[in-house]
Amino acid sequence: PTVFLCCTEGFGRNTSFFIVVLAMLLTSLIEIPIQTVRTRKPEYSETEARCIGELYGVAVAEELHADTEKCYKTHITLNLGGFIIPLLFSIYLLLSFNQPGGEALPLLEVTMATILMTLIVYMVSEVKGGVGIVIPNYVGLFAIPLGFILAPSELPLRLIAEVLIFVPAVVGILLGMLIALVTLPREKVGSAFFNLGGIGSFYTIYLISFLALILGSIA
Image (cartoon, rainbow, N blue to C red; front, side, top):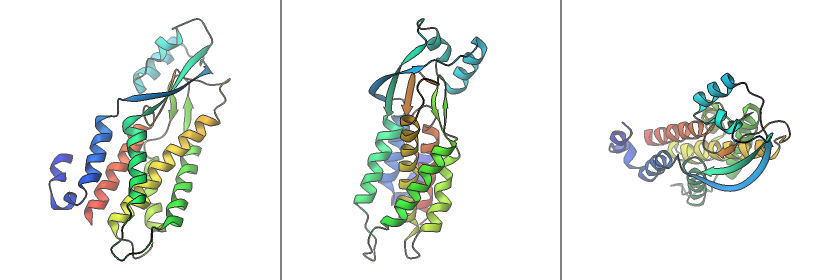
């Protein structure tokens, strides 16, 4: 259905946006390792570990019994489709901002929306033992009302979707996860992997990206 919509007149003006959203989906299984740290293993029963593993698609039970140590050798990774591609596209949208009337980028509004999204993500995110940082799927939707509330009256809908919905949502989600990771009490909770933009957060990022694409195409 997404490919079909891309062929319509509305989506034709957002070809690059569509290609990015499609690339995010196709590269969502690619993880780029950046660091290894030690974090505490959670005390799950065999049943709890298997239930969590089935829910999030991670081998929690296997990782718990991989060795006799009480700490994980935690691998921190960046997901190509959920972290790197949307972040680079956000930077591109800001640098290539071009309004027909010649007005400047609404940097103050973008900054405010990003800060608010970061705070929301940090407050609702959860570090689930054995899984990593988990963000509710609905969190990115907060960027939509924020974008419309903060948008200057003369800003077209397409640009609102790009720089006041997509950019603050993506950057806010990623910053919120990074803050949660940095402030993580490693002696109390841990995971074998922390997939930034991957398990626990990819669906959130992809959903708001797709909705921003649709909103921008309505214009």
